[in-house]
Every structure is written in C-alpha cells, then in structure tokens.
Length: 162
Image 1 (cartoon, rainbow, N blue to C red):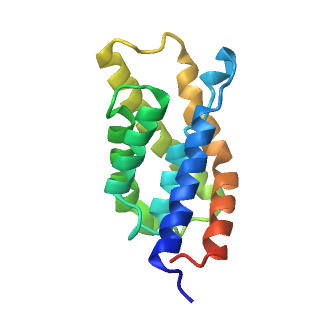
Image 2 (cartoon, rainbow, N blue to C red):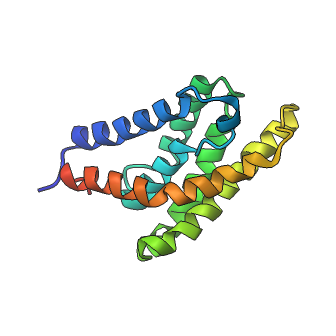
C-alpha cells in the first residue's frame, strides 16, 4: 500500500528537520570545519529515492531554511542545493542502479560540487575560509553516506513512501 501525501510530506520534512538540527548543533572550533553537510546528504537521498516528490523547489526551500538557521548569506545554500538537486535529478536513474559502495564516489563528486559553489559564493562575499579544512567536508559526507542512506531507506520503507 502506498503512503498518503501527508505521510510522505511529514516523513521527508522531518528528515530535513533532523538534518538541520545536526547542522546547528554547537561544535568546538576545531571540529566545526569538519562537520558534514547533513542537509545536502538528505537532499541527495530524497532526490534519488523519490524524485517526483523532492526536486529543485524543495532544495531551494531547504537551502533558504538552512541559510536562516546558520546565519549565512541568504541564498548561499539555496543556490548550492538547487544546483545539487538539478544534477541529481538528471542522474538519478543511473545512480539508483549502483550498489551502495559505488554510490560513495558519486556522492563525493556531488558534495564537492556543492562545496565548490559554497566557497565561490563565500569568496565573492569576502568571507572565504583561510584554511583548507573545508575540502574535508565532502570526504566526510561521502564516508557517512552509507549510514545516511540506510537510515533514510529504513524510514522510507517503514512508511511505504514511493
């Protein structure tokens, strides 16, 4: 049996909310640069799993909410998430066929594109980080991809989202 629209909306929205909570949890300065992009990982999963429900518009809204929560330049994450969603939606039929270990390099490339856009926007605004630790975020996110994938897939199967 297929889940209702409201069930799907609440499951997807609550996963984005959980990712945003993980994004704003306070960390020491040394670990802050290593925090993975949780919202981007959740966006990648939902665009791969249910592309008819989560797309560029959802990515834009999630990005604006992330911008508001983190206090960054309004539209910074929104642009990155929209580009990320566009690329995923173009490739989702291929990537879905890959086994989980083969999805990790794809997620690494997607997160690197997202990080490049973010650093470009920060550079234009004059707030670019002076350290190279920002490039570890995509690597850490790609290494966490199997955990995020399995957790969200379990929730999707439990609530029968299609």
